[in-house]
Image (tube, rainbow over all chains, first blue to last red; front, side):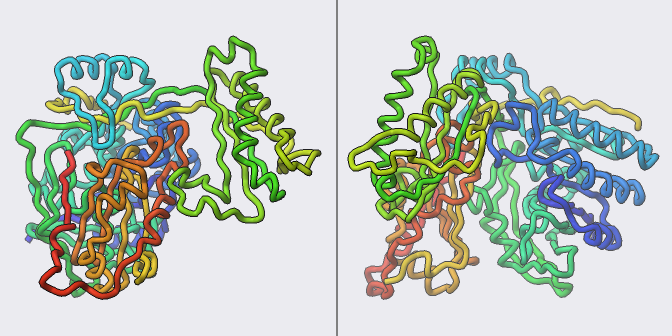
Amino acid sequence: MSELKLLALNGFLGYGYELESLKAGLEAGAEMIGADAGSTDAGPFYLGSGRQLVKTAQVERDFSHALQAARGRGIPLVIGSAGTAGGEPHLHSLLEVVRRSAERQHQHFKLAFIHAEIELELVLRALEEKRIEPMPGVPPLTAQEVRQTTRIVGQMGSEPFIRAFKAGAEVIIAGRACDASVFAALPIMQGYDAGLALHLAKVIECGALCARPPSAGDSMLGTIRDDHFTVRALNPLRRVSPESVASHSLYEQPDPNRFEEPEGSLDLSGAEYETAPDGSVRVSGSRFLPRSGGITIKLEGARLEGYRSVTVAGVRDFKVLAHLEEIEAETRGMVERNLTDEMVREGYRLLFRYYGCNAVLGENEPLSERHGHEAGVLIEAIASTQEAADTVLALARSSFLHCSFPGRSTTAGNLAFPFSPSDLSAGQVYSFSIYHLLHGADQQRLFPIEYEQI
Amino acid sequence: MKQLAELTEVFRSKNAGPFLLTVDMVFAETSGYEAVKRSGVLNRETVAERYRVDAQQVQIHYVDGIRTVKVTLPRPGAASGAPGDRDVYGAQQHGPLLDLEIPDEPPPRSESKSQNNTEKRRNL
């Protein structure tokens, strides 16, 4: 019976991993090292701005050890969703790390990098051709929203990775990719069952998050065979169990039994989990259902909403706590009355959050009547320029601080500021303007590959 | 009567993409899981009311083998990271379900309709 062993470094390139775990994986005979380097978890800012959630030094540490290990054994190294969001700036940031690490280690290899940024024009055409469908919970897309979008990426499936492998790539750096494609592509190319390959990939793409104790900062080993796969933690301090693996399969997913991938659906309703004699977990019964209507690619786009300015302060006086609503209303009025007409016309957003009251759940907070002895006040202004946001925030801060209300006794000020300066310019604010499916997609065209001999 | 929070060993919320929220409850004992499944107390209408979302868009999945209930709903308020959002990762949005009261005693067997609240809606 043939088998293929895949080593998942960690849940996010840059989160760190134990070097001993990497070593154990190599000794166990890993035939590919992979890692996911992106997510929409941290919000739309990274896609819009071209910046990264993790720092370059973290990425470099994680990548350089993996490169040394992979080249030392002559096995492929595959990274998906480069630089958090997988757009062009993100891809190039990781490529710099790759070239720097290679030079330092005197490594030579064939590098493939796969682009995932999608042109606005292509999305506009697809919209006209009615090939765009909103994801659940997302409104339909309009041409205007596409034009307002700063950057669009598509989540590639397994095909671009397979193309790169077939071209002889030894290190593959991909832009935005489905988490599972990073690990599923090689076994699918070698003829293993796509359902098992995708399920295995889903289990290990978060690193040791499927083990106990769980961690996104440690490595896992997955072994795929003809009719099942096994997973095990590479750190002896962690264990997997049928429950831990089955539970992880549904993490961050809307439906525990069905997962949509570009090439089809993964059906886990018949999946069975059991403990293997060596302590690993053996999984079988996962099924892949190819999509009849062709390839469907998930698009992600971010739009600039403006600039943010914030201040954070505390309230310890019970009368202030009892009058937060009135103070907020009065503050809003004062800001509007005191801004120039031009700034009011330009538009701005002013938001107040009261930590200790209902800051986390807002109007859904069931305990909003229960106040503690103090509360945190976060005041946020969003406007079309940083200067405008700073101005709105400064006015809101002074108005809130000195606002009077019936029965007020804290006439020196309603807020305790921990910092000087109290106001922080927080930069660009983005939102996800596109989170839609593109039907009838051509992956060869959407995800072009460049090769470079390092 | 026990609250959901007392019956579970994992009770978490998380984004399922920037526009959906998913709440996973892993029950400590099979009996607690079965009690919830049987009671029908955890239903689309209850979730919709507590999160102020459309009941038609709420999914409730029971995963028998691992004593897990998954509730998926439109993200209350703004999408992840958009202006006005309160929880970018959605990791602290399980609060409204923690105190849901679950009856101890199962209703007589003839009246139990455990399948009624096993609602599965396919995504896409």
